Image 1 (spheres, protein in one colour):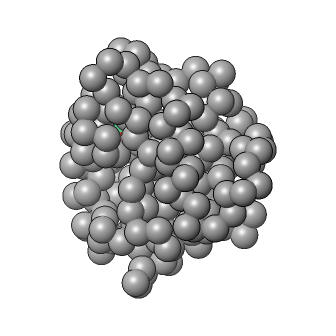
Image 2 (cartoon, helix red, strand yellow; image 1 turned 180 degrees about the horizontal axis):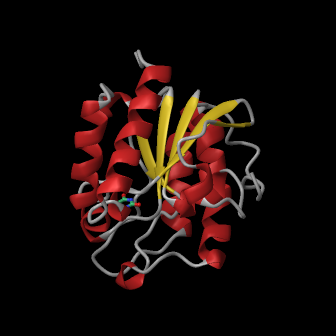
Length: 194
Ligand code: URA
């Protein structure tokens, strides 16, 4: 991973996840009427999914992947035999970028230390990086998703699957197949999750 984790040595254990949420809620300021989307799921999840940034519905509700991309993701998780309730889901960026634009590098650099600490606290065995923002944040800033998708990586003892973001596959049948296939590979390797 390219950037260090936040300088909060007091946040070490899974019990500290609630404090990390509060820290993020202070640190990241959403647009009026929107919320910080910290992420959610079982604290001891073996599988962590990381997306890019909340969209409109996520920022309104405070929950990750609840819009169109989330519905597609749920469908493919289902096909892979992965129960979303057993997975922790979060994003690199915790507030919606204005106008849903792609997050800037500077925004990723500010948000990444918090994500890294979130990963350290949850200690998942497996991570799925959905889309190139997550792939470059977690695996390698120079990684090209078209070159490494579908290939397991190992980062700090965690097995990481890079794949396409659900929003990127809507109008591309080939990418849809890859995403589906990559999630099936994740299911094959990490099930059972409980
Ligand atoms: N896209 C993301 O990357 N994350 C969400 O939570 C929703 C859409």
